[in-house]
Every structure is written in structure tokens, then in C-alpha cells.
Image 1 (cartoon, rainbow, N blue to C red):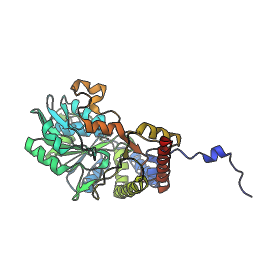
Image 2 (image 1 turned 30 degrees about the vertical axis):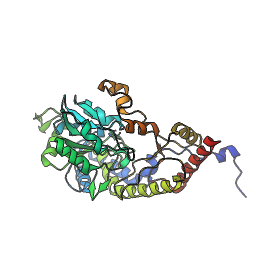
Image 3 (image 1 turned 90 degrees about the vertical axis):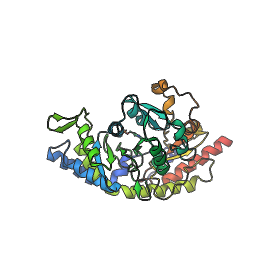
Image 4 (image 1 turned 180 degrees about the horizontal axis):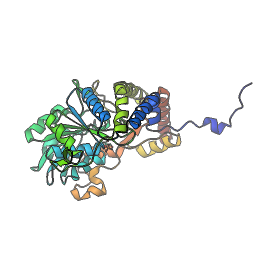
Length: 384
Ligand SMILES: Cc1ncc(COP(=O)(O)O)c(C=O)c1O
């Protein structure tokens, strides 16, 4: 006997498709992750212990060597790295306006002044050719952001930075494992900053971050800084903060790390699928990247009809996000920096048109086909 039919309206409604579904992403590892958490619970050791030490070593090795210092968030990673690079009150720090606000708040938290640089119209990444004109006498550092998972042009940035004696602090929050010539995002400058926010390519079950450095002395200094400036128990050589990656998060991250390369590869495959499916539509797709240089933290398209597309996708049960709708220099909180609208036309155009589609290594091709079909239908609707 066949099962009773559901009413048409219900059976026709497809399931909601989120931009990123962490439960689906980690489903195959859930028992292992639960085991790691329970190991920490049984140990009774929750802060600055063996799990963190093991993860720091494993992540440094995964990045190709050097030292990793776990901290409480990507924002803290940036702030501590900038401070360790000698950035303080009154210093200028170059970065882009079309980034997550924490890239900039880490700079202003130190009393330093963000000096924005426009981005490439093709990639949304800092335009090396625009840096010279943005450098002011107060500039001490530059923070390239590997936005959406794509490695910035670090050779050219390195050359400008050397000329102007700028420390390079990479914002690699979205680019775990993006590599050029085998060299990983986050390992090109003095410091590389990572976020382990749950939806990142390597995500914790809460907040977390890390700083990479090639220097053992800088790593030791950062370990002191993240722990109230404490060198030995109750001996404080410097003024520090409390910013530590806790044992539970470190154990979870260590469990996930061996899978990161495979996840990144799957992201590249799915990006290729999206590309194929969306090619016929009047959208701007991400500029193709040489193999390895993009880990597709997000899959973003550009359209002058973004609001219409978002609405049409939402009506079809498909979520989208915008990374980021308001460039930082146009945020109310940063108006006093004095940059007018139109100061960074390329970054502003990205903010006006970029749209992040559902994307995760856990997605099947059918989900991408569903998004593509909804986008195609939206275009039909626009014409009609
Ligand atoms: C580009 C960028 N920089 C910095 C951060 C800050 O990281 P967190 O949220 O871990 O503080 C994020 C993530 O939110 C980010 O995407």
C-alpha cells in the first residue's frame, strides 16, 4: 500500500537552505568531537593546558612551521599582533574598508588610526598599486585581508611594505590554508591572524583565534601578553590582557584540523560547480584563482540587482548574506576618521553589490542547482 499523499502545498515546499550549516558540516565528526570535549571535562584542566599546546603545535605544522599562539578570538589576534608589532596610540595602520569591522576595531582599540586603501575591482582584495598613495608619515603597519578565502598579492604588498618600513600583519580570518607557492596565508608577514569563529573554514564551538609568527621571541611575548603579561607565576614583566583559547575549543579544533585540507578541496570543487551553473546568468562570479590560492570561505557573486535576487531567493527558502553591506569608513562608529562617501569607489562598489550564496563542504550539488535555478528564475522575473 502506498503512503498517503501530503497536501501539495507542504510537499512542494523545499527545506530552508542556510548560508552555512555547522551541524551538517561537522556531522561525520560529531562522535569524535564529543569524545574530545569529554576528555577535557574529565581532565579538569580548562585553560592553558595540554590541549592548547598540542593544537598550537599541530596548527603551526599545518601552516608549514613557525609558532602559533592561541587567543580568544580573531579580533584579539589582530589587536595583540598589532601591539606586538609596536603599533600604538597615534600610529597609522593601512587596511581595506570592505572588511569585517573587527579588522578595523583592532586598530582603533590601540589608539591607532586606520588608513584605508582601495581594493581591486576583480578580487575585492587590497590593491597593491593603491598603497603608496595611502601611506602617511605615521604609518607603521599594513593589514592585508584575505577576504572570502583568497590570498592577497603578498609579493607586491611585501615590496611596498619594505619600502615604507611597514610591519605586515595578515588578517587570515577567512583564509585558513590558502597557499601560493606552498606558502600559507598568515605566514607571509611578521604576524598572521586567524579566527576560529564557528562558521570559519576551521571553526570552534564558540569564539577562538590564533596568531602565527616565525619568531620564537615574538611567540613568547604573545604568550605573556595573552595571559595578563605574566612571565612566571605572579611575575608580570609587561601589561597584558586575558585572551586565551580554552582547552575545550583547542581539543575541538585539533579534532577538526586533520580534515581541513579535504574540506578546502571540497570547497574548491563546489566553487567550480557554482561557476559552471551560474556562468550563463548575468552575475559577476569570483575571479578565477590559481590552484590553491583560494579556499572559498564564502562563495560571493556580484549583481546590481542584489536586493531583488535576495528577495527572490528568500521566497524560495534560500538564505543569503552580505559580506559586507557598509564599508567601514561609512559606519557611524568610524565617521570621525573623516572619509567621505566615494573615497574608495571599488570597495564601495563591492559593498553595494556583493552577495554570499549558501556554501559549505557539506552541501551536495543538488543544493547548488537549486540556488542556480532560483537565481535564473529571479532573472526571468526581472525581465517579465
Ligand atoms: C576578515 C575578518 N577579520 C576579523 C574577524 C574577527 O574574528 P573574530 O570574530 O574571531 O573575532 C573576522 C571574523 O569575524 C573576519 O571575517
